[in-house]
Amino acid sequence: MRKIAIINQKGGTAKTTTAVNLAAALALHNRTVLLIDMDPQGNISTWFDIVPQKSLYHLLVEEMTMPSECIVPVRERIDILPSTKTAAQAELILTGLPGRERVLSRKLANLSGYDFVLLDCPPSLNLLNQNAIVYADEAFIPVSMDYLALVGVKQILENLKMVREILEHPIEVSLVIPTFYDGRNRKSREVLEKLELHFDGKVTEPIRANVRLAEAASHHQTIFEYDPSSYGAQDYQRLAERVLSEVSSTNGHHAQKAQVISR
View 1: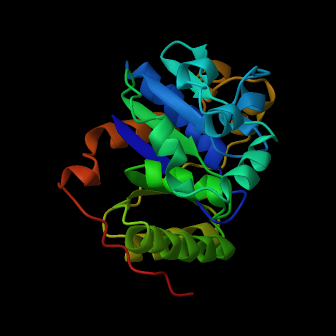
View 2 (view 1 turned 30 degrees about the vertical axis):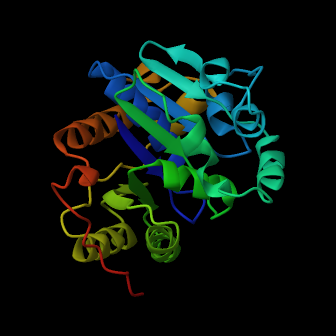
């Protein structure tokens, strides 16, 4: 089971879009996926138009609550562990506890039945994100094609280094995913070139800017349901194929050699 945090310190990089549509693409390849929403905004719940009875808050705060009580099936081979605004309250409650960064890992220690667990992380290094990073074995970083997004990449690399050193958890960056790419735009081409320069073979084919991706979310559908012939569907299908061809870095087959990007 591969446990992947989808993370960037900058907002607006298509983290949730990537989590949902990568999950959908993997499901089309007959893989079972659990999506965990670590963001108190509850974007994944909104995407799938559900109002959960129990959520991430209950799993983290209530000792007797089991994962099965919170997990909701939303599509064939796709389940979600939803979040709501109460997740922010969970963070306050956990702050005073020993081992607070490992509560999610402890509660999901016996989780099974999934090929992939994808964690959609908010753009911060709050306690919820720390729990996600400590639980995950690898990180995917979506990067929008603007220079401010490169700053977010620098921050997340520094934070992952901190997790490795201070929390002693060997998470590594497996893939960097360019998003909102427009090959006609010089800025897009320059940012992509900079990513490829600094991330040794880890940059995927870009996810092209495509309005159908936003439309799919507004219709509570994956891109494969909304417009399977769109660029968005093509790009996330290609991303899934790349993910399936990779071996998790925690299996010792590769290690991230990314350098910190200089502006």
